[in-house]
Length: 177
Image 1 (cartoon, rainbow, N blue to C red):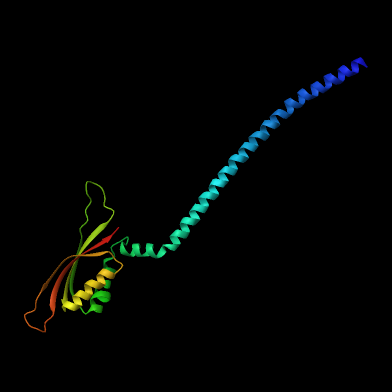
Image 2: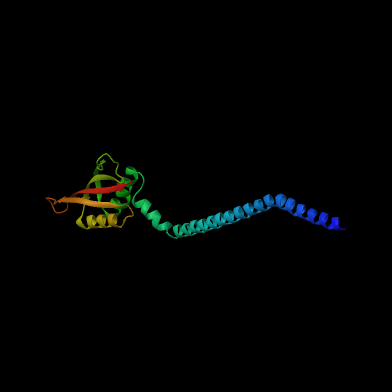
């Protein structure tokens, strides 16, 4: 009986030691997995917050889509001179009673100090004829258009006879990026 208690004690001690050596790596592996799980949960939370932020930005952009469309039409990516001339002739000059006699244009933006400018400037020279009231309406339509157009210079010449139209020479600055 004396030996049986010693054998049982030694067996229990060996079992505990073997259990610790066999279970310790599994316990450490379990701790590592739990740590990785916490890290993945934090990453998932951050990705969810980022996705919510992107959705809120998208909603605010959707609300401001009209404004962005107006800005894109005010500063188009290319000058699209033919459509601008069509706008000036049909939508502006013809509507206001002006006659568009001649048009010339040139790009006036140059790169400065070896760097490229973000915005391109174009100078348009228009020769128009019509009444003074029609010219005022023409300028008003230009001012109200969505395109970014600046009137730089305007001249007019008075007719020699009363029923002749007034000739206007207008220089415009148009922008694109």
